[in-house]
Every structure is written in C-alpha cells, then in structure tokens.
Length: 254
Ligand SMILES: [Zn+2]
Ligand SMILES: [Zn+2]
Image 1: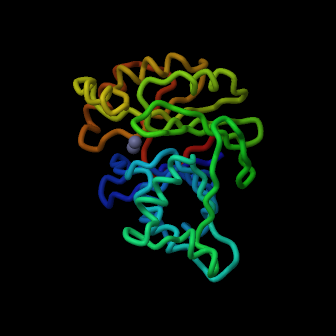
Image 2: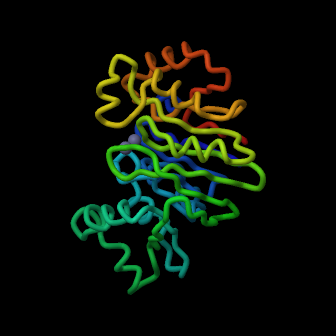
C-alpha cells in the first residue's frame, strides 16, 4: 500500500499540513481538505473514491473544487463515502445551491459529478481492491477513522480524535496491522484546548499509542502548523520506538 499525505503549502511543504487528505495507491483519498488544490487535473482524475471522516472544514474544504475539476461528460464519476451525519451536513451546508451547486441533483440530469454512498460503522466495503472499515472515534462531530486492508496488510487512519477506545480494540484484533496514522494537534501546554475540542496533545498521544499492539509504525499527523516545532520536540521526547513524524508529499510504503 502506498500512502501519501497531500501537501498544498507552497513553501516548507513537508511540514505544513494545513488541511487533511491522505492518498492511497493514487486512487483512493481519505478526506478532501486539500485534494482539490493538489497536483494536476490528471492526478486528481485518478482518484475514484473519497472516504470522508467527518464534516470539519479542514477535511472537506476542497471537495467541491475536486468534483468540478474531475468532471467529464462520461457516465463514470467519483464516489464519496461518508456517514449519514457527514453526508447530511454536506447536502445542507455545501452542495446547497448557495455555497456550491447541488451536484447530487445535477447528476440525475446530466453526466454525473458525484455519487454519495452512506457508510455504516464497522461494516466493511471494497474500493479499488482495498477493504475499508469505518470505526467510530471521539471528536466534536460524528467522526470515523478507517481500517484499510490490502491483502494481508492493514493500516489505520485515526482522523481527528480525543482519547478513544473502540479504534484500539479493533487495532488489536486486526491481523497484519502495519501502521496507524494518529493525530497530535496541540502542544502539551494546550491540553485544556485539546480536551475541549477533542484532539490530542503529545502526552495524550502517548496514552493512545500505548494501547496499540507492539511493532506497529505510528505516524504523527495533523500537527497544527503554528505549533509544529514544539510538537515535534514533545513528540520526540516521548521516545516511542515506532514513532515517525509524518511529512506531506512523501510516499510511505507499507
Ligand atoms: Zn475535526
Ligand atoms: Zn482536522
């Protein structure tokens, strides 16, 4: 499985993850925070499925731009997979004829822009040869992480979350788990902010990471750009043997 964290910052690209999109094997995206501002139209067109974790802007912001860029007069279109709650938010607040055209309704009358597919927690589905299972995490709006399996290997994308339990139970029961992408949004001194907004600090990150099976690679993601330097210091000070601080626009092979 090839995973790339998409970048869009024009300078210091690797260390500035302003918004979230994870590209798997060049054809499946998790979230669309920056997908629509990334790469060429041809690279975007290769992405056939978008798996949304939740409705926050840093995860959906460029979905309208992406869908417009990749549209062709062909009968095929990308599929967006998300929970009922996230789809409902998109329909009411984004594709509402005010912020953006109602691409779902337009797709009934002309070559389609998008197909929305509602996911069920812990019910696996297949996209592009990957088996994908949504698992609930603990964030300010309904949010799901994803267990993504290709053959005998699996990777977990935790999305935005405060302290959580079920995802780590699933992780311990997942054969061939190679890596977990786990957020570390705020420095330790902002623990109150992290608790209130349901994110993690490096200290809280360590508590979550301790619940993972041994030997799994742990990638720290979603480091708020403003606090990147202190977050990197605090994460390294945890001395977790399998920890890597993830960088944008680098390919990670599992
Ligand atoms: Zn969020
Ligand atoms: Zn976020």
